Image (cartoon, rainbow, N blue to C red; front, side, top):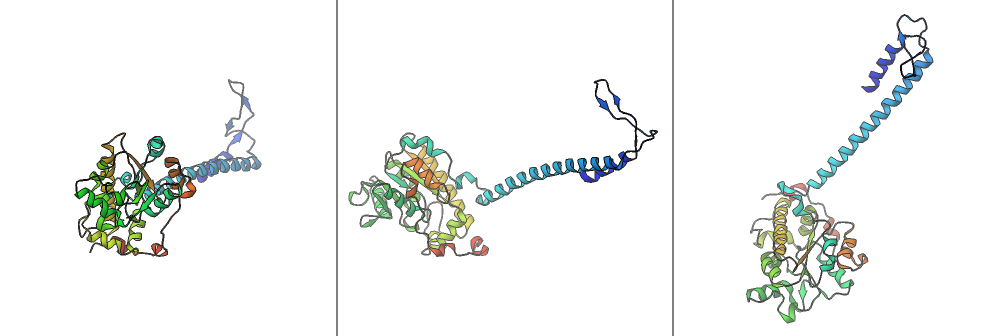
Length: 315
């Protein structure tokens, strides 16, 4: 449209005749077009003007295209980000809070207790802290399962880590549950946060669809979640990505609120295990080299394709 308008102006311009240059009030030379002038505008000047107008038009159009492209990219990125915001949930509850690690680095102290879910990086956390020289345990505490030890201690009215043969004197608890059947970090969240003074808690995140697929392809874990009757995830719920996303979102809110009740006593570190910079974030927070971080327990079948119907199924 812009080029067409410019051509129309040039066509009209070529029909005018030019008088001699005149000097304006500012001493600048100007050209006055007059219909009664004898000389016609030379064709070479028309071509030059045409080229200048086209060049100017092209620059404007390129700028408009670039501006539109920037807007389009921003919109596309927002659309991609919104994929995790299932059924209107706030995206902050499905993503780690940023820049938290730098603020609390000097306050972090063991034990480091992972409050995240199964299939959300617990093996990677265990390997990381073990590489950093901490006495780390994962899933099993001595000869018993950590989840059973913690559950027994709490039900007996004791501190969650009070069972000496099972849970004491570890620097890192990379996984404290025993799968969906003993998801103690969810069912006993208040007791754990209140009962372990000065602990640093870790909350892991990942893309919800990837988490759902990973659980669906690992020891029938997705179905076990559905049948376990977990706090915030009643029996029969957990049949699709949306229901899992809502469950985890509400759990994240509970964790943040519970830890915030004890300022100066606890710290909460939140990480996205799928972030390419997670190793550096861990190093920044805990001081152990980023080279100690690496994805663990990622079986090939975790990349299997699950149909849209399976991801969204309701029955």
